[in-house]
Structure formats: C-alpha cells, structure tokens
Image 1 (cartoon, helix red, strand yellow):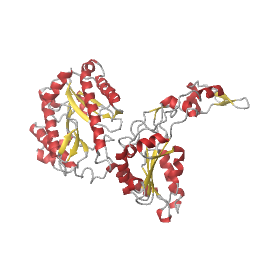
Image 2 (image 1 turned 180 degrees about the vertical axis):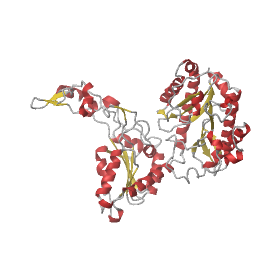
Image 3 (image 1 turned 45 degrees about the horizontal axis):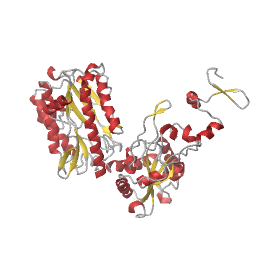
Image 4 (image 1 turned 180 degrees about the horizontal axis):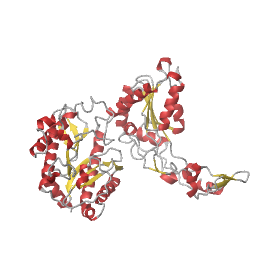
Length: 524
C-alpha cells in the first residue's frame, strides 16, 4: 500500500487505501451518527400545501410541442435538459438547460439538471392538444426533509442548493405530465425497434447528455434484427432531422418570446449605461477592459439570469479582434471601446447589442468617419430588411455601403463593383463576418436550420435577428493608411420583423455619433 494514501479501516481492523472517488469528501466533517440523522430528519416546517398557478409560457410551449408532434407522428422524441457540468473538481457551473428543452417546456434559469422531456407516440389525434404524442417531463423532484438526500447530497439536496419543485408543482406550472427520473430508462427504451416489426423509432437530441446517447444507441443495437451490420449513422441522420426541426421551430417567435426579447434588451441597455459610468475607473485601471466587463456583468446578474454570451470589451486595437473575450487590456483616452454584450433573461432569451464608444467622450475626425460609414451600412441593412426579402440581402445592402466607402478612402485595391462580385470580395478583409444572425434562446439562434430557411429564407413577421456591420482596421495592417490603423467599429441592434417592416428593439441605445457623445456626457 502506498503510505501517502489516506487509509480507512476495513471490518478486519486492517488499513485499506481510501477509494479515490471518495477522497473528494476528505474536506467534509459531516457527522454520521444515528443521533445526527434522527435530528436532521425532524423538526422542519411542513412544505406549503397549495399548488402554483399555470406559468404564462405554458400555452405557448404546448403549441410548440404540438408543432413538433405533427412533424414526427409515431416516433418517440427525447429532448434532454443536460447534466450539470463540472467547473473544477467538485464544483459545477451554474446550470443552463439545452435550448430545445427550454423551448418545449418553458423552463428557464437553473431548473432541473438531468431532466428529460419525452414525447411518446399515441394514436394520431389522441395526444396532447389533439396531437400525436403525450408529453412527460422526467426529473428528480424535491426530496423529503426526512431523507438523507435533503442534507447529504451537495448537488440536489435542499439543504445545499435550495428547494426543488415537486412532481405536482411542476405539472401544475407547465401543464405537462411529470414522472420521477428513476423511471426514465424504462420509458426511453421500452419497445424500441424497427417500426416494420412493431417497434418504436426513437429520435434524440444528441450531444446534450452523453449517458442518454449511449442508452439510446444500446437500445437500438439490442433490438436490431442484425446487430453486426447495424449502421448507427442512419440513426444519427434521424436524430439530426429532429435537431433541425427544433431549430427551425424557433425561426419565428411567438408573442411571449418577443416580450422576453424586449425584457432582455431593456436590461442590456441598462448594462451599457453602467459601462459608461464605469469608464473613469476603467481608464485608471491597468486592466480597464475587465472593469467594463464587470460593470455589465453586475447588471446582467441583477436584472436577468446571466450573460447571454461572454462579453466583448475591446479597447483600441483589441476592437479589431472579432471575438475578443480576454478583456485584459487597458482602456485609454483617445481610443475607441467596442462592447458587444447581452443580458440573458430568466427565461433564457438573450439580447445581443454592440456599441462603439469614444473613451474620451468625443470621436476624433477619423474615428467619426469610420463610425459614420458603419452606421450608414447599418441603416442600409435596416432599409433592406422587409417582409419577403431574403435574409442574405440584408448583408448585401450593408456591404454595398462599406465597399463604396473603402473605395472612396483609397483603401480598396479594386473598384467597389469588382470587390462586391463573387470573384472579388476584397472588402471582406475589413468586414469578414456576416451582418445578421437570428437571435433568441441562443445568441446565434436557429443554428441547425436548413440553409434554404435561414440564409436563403425570406424574412417573416415574428423573426428576431441582429443587424451588425463593422469595419476592423488592425494596427498591423500595412495595406491601409496609418490614420486608420487600430480602429475597430461595430454597431449592432436587435431587430423584430413585423408585417410593417423592422422594429429596432434596441433603439433606446443611441446610434449616431452626436447622440452617442451626448449620451456619454449625460451619464458621466
């Protein structure tokens, strides 16, 4: 035995090495006496007896489940929330469920790690809301205060993480039948097999919970007529179709979702005000970008669930790095500060807004010139964004403006017309990303949707997306005049498409150079 290993006695009185999985508890000094257990199991106030009312999202989530039911009649659909994720050793990240799970159940914030929504096929038209499936939400409910889990389970015990809902409470809130997680495996694998021989086809949202991936694959293998020749890639394709359908279901938001987007954007606007108030402290700090990041994060946690994505707080040349999230640089007077940030609401819907601010409060002449070009490109994109217009045309409208300005400034090595051709694209050196993406539960929402419904799809009322052109002139770029080097500008707004055209959800945040300067002066 290695003498450095902690040792525990076995029944014979000899010492044995402590199992490595148990060593995480070496820091714990929890009593294990029967007297302690008896004490912990008694003397607690009873739980409240009345059930909660129905959540406002419940009827909307029911319509979403019905839409998916119509797509896949006769098949079992499995949508996991996902497990807790370890941050370090025995500490976890705050839990966030998979977006498809949140969309179909209406559950947001940190509810129910390991929960799984199963849509079980029934006779057509006899399921929930006249659909083809009955939905059941499997999760681990609140343990009684007379159980050891109450005080001994650091991941799910009420003593450690707070109260969890009971089966009845969650069913009352969501209008979904509920069941204990202990019954999940049987429900998931029951009757799995080829429909041709009377089995049930299963479709799973994969890469969310590895244990469920393995469980479903094993069930498919065990029920195959010829397991040796089973091609799991065929089943992967079926699962991909479910992921695709769930993603496309979110392309058009319902009224409840739009309200959540407005809430997230309003909180984000408040966060940007905090950033401006924090600028003097940021300038004085050696890692001023962290000061900016922290000011926004505090508002995100106060007003919402969290950040919708890692904040980009990029000053000076860092603003030319598209996804600069290190945020460890200084914030200097005379530079531009590009902040790309969004608050995620309690419902998990997120805003995504970018503003570029002159740290000193006033744009220089060249900074204003670049900023105005980006603003004009954004305005052109807004003008192009109309119902029935293809999504890709929003980007094209912005690129026409930017290519023309780059030609006008003598930066573009060819004409704007040549650059805009498919064989050209030289202007994309300074604007390499897309101008728009869908927005919602994910900052890059609907990412698994088919190209013909996304990039080549037509804009429709209820769609929420960004408009975010930019220009990025790196300090190391010798192809441009020196006066432009080190300037990065992006302006990003969140847009709701209506029957009458686009509505700028983030319009409360100033956009023009003069308005930005006046706004900053009013807050400083």
